[in-house]
Length: 133
Image (cartoon, rainbow, N blue to C red; front, side, top):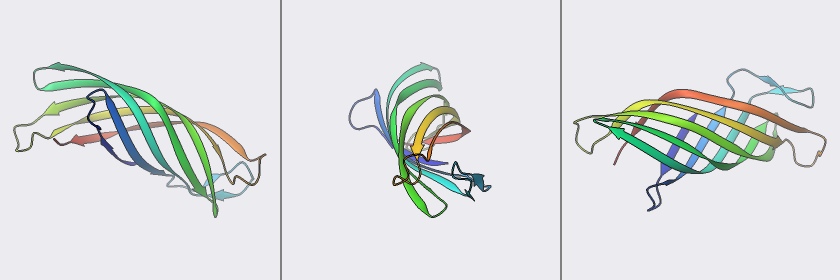
């Protein structure tokens, strides 16, 4: 998963673009197999707690996705809930580094012209995060 987020002038709101792709080929609801990818746009509300050079941030909000797999493109939507634990550095531009966890419930259709090909799944992301500004 790769994601980029910005705060559009409100300290409690973040807009994120993300891309996730399956490494192994997955079984699709149609019976075919293929790599499935999600291109998403998220709008999350955030709340931060600070103590010394550390911060803990919780976030939640809705998102929409375009789904690709097995030569088809579909769409989906869902909700995300997660947290980031960041550690400040003394480097120029004040970057922070830390850990994150995000859980998503995704409802998607692939391809859209086949109404009986729907899926719902949970996605859990664990990883490293870096922030700037």
